[in-house]
Image (cartoon, rainbow, N blue to C red; front, side, top):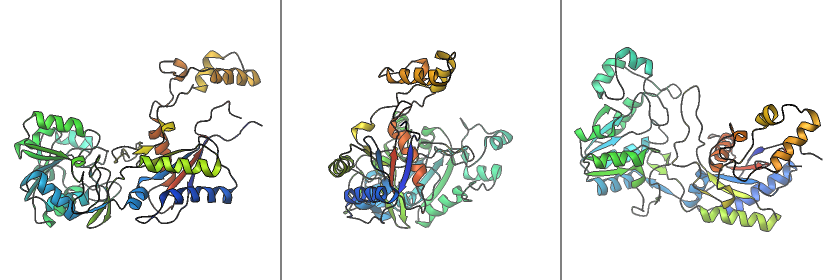
Length: 397
């Protein structure tokens, strides 16, 4: 009988994860218990995904504000430091900023405008146009920003992030100066020691700063790359991908996850005889059309995945085939013609007009986004996601 359901994404409930928990056993047991409860079975090439949050929690990958401060002092000297291009987030950056401020005498905080890297807005382009401000060249002081634009609160959170970050810095006994600019080298008019906090443009920003004469340049990915007094760390991403845990502690992005996903895959094979793919996922890579916020505040969507998730989709566009190659067919004849086209498609459809309009993104980015939307970020209690049928097509029975 022809299968009538395509891709299905299920949130799998599991226990509250604590440091030291056996995440392999918890993941496998939770999925199999859900399958028994809901009356479904696993198939080859199903995808099991675990949110990065519980992976890092099980690893105990935490650090304190004091740990951040000590590393910042060691790497930048503890004097005046430029902190540039941070995102506007209480969860993602505020605790990091407190740690940086605790490790410095003065911070020159340089905010990009009218929005941060992931789309959180300080201003609108209409406000800039009305004020005659050119964001590509103009540098605004804190006083000029207030004179022109007054108080601007985030659309969703209601927070005035300019004031919020100023208060955080000064609350650590650190002197603060805030400027608004979009050219990285502008910060060098204030200090030669810089922490660039951008995520996806960080390599370019570092290059520009070093080529422009900066004395010391550290990205967030260069802070806590090794343990400080027994703290957690991430040797690849540092503070990138971290989240607020408490007012004095952060949870870092998980590290060394390849062994975890491989072990989970093997355990499913042993228990079910099915070859499933496994990944760890963080933020999905999508953009909110209302707030214009790009979700991806993590350095990558997936820090670890099994080998079957490498690559991009290789799909034909059904509507293109129906409207072009087989425009003269209908009914069963159309179905059979399209099915045969799919069964005999090339292994690499790049450049083929019949694949235009399919999504040219990495599988882990697409699947990770589906996982993030399924699990949410609140109180659903589903840190494990099971996706079935993702690799099926129109011909699968």
